[in-house]
Image (tube, rainbow, N blue to C red; front, side, top):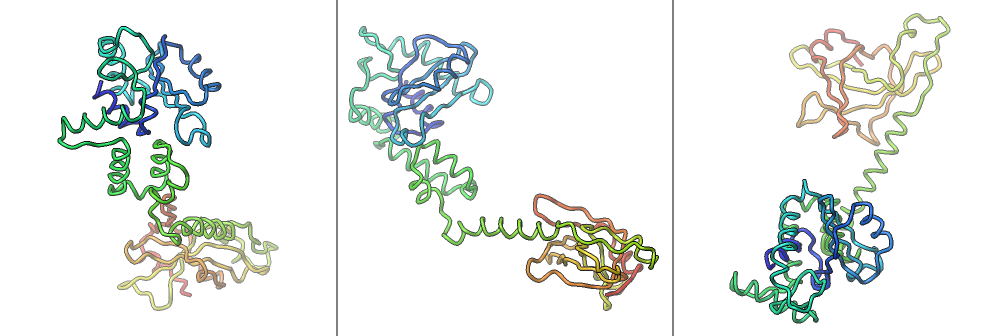
Length: 324
């Protein structure tokens, strides 16, 4: 039993009450029956239900923050949680019947006399003795939870804010605890994600705004086949050469009414990644002659990091020079 209890805590690290008061459903139920049960589960109860179709369900309505978050429902399927479901079923079918006293009851975990843990103190002492016997030191369930959190905070995964929030919810911590224990970012760091999002949204809206197209009244043949607004184009500065080629990338925003000039958004080449370009908010919009645009040009957008990769060789672009 000890192994099964600690295994269940390891995958669902709640407080002692959830383990101590966990009750076993007398019969295996179909998945639909269990799902219906979760919708009207009594507040204050904790149950483990074995589905006739394989998965094992935990429904916890008796935990510290249940009034705020509602029942905690966990479905251990037989694929991802194969190890867990195997040992839970093994304990239910083999070990638990041997441990039960003559006074039958539905509490899933039992003390050495085969009866329920009636108080939190008796359960804590039992758990502490397990660690004392096998590891040489006592350990309470709160210390186990603290050790788990500290292990997470020292791991590389702790920088994943969503994972930290998910772990806090599994541990059934309050929002205040989630912020003060799991979220180790400073206030500026917490705000930076939102600020970055708002900045990207504003910039993308401006850059993707449908702008004015050049005039196509036939007055100037040179303006008839210009790049469309939103397309990426190259420009070569006057000091560029074949030996030391230099290329700018720009996104076409809008043309003047006569099509002679164009408003462009400048994309700066990354120092650490040559041929990769990134928009520079606040400094990267200017107007230039349409004759300075070099096209066509092979540019690929990388959505994950928001960069544009220039695949046309710079020397080739210099040979097509329409210098700025």
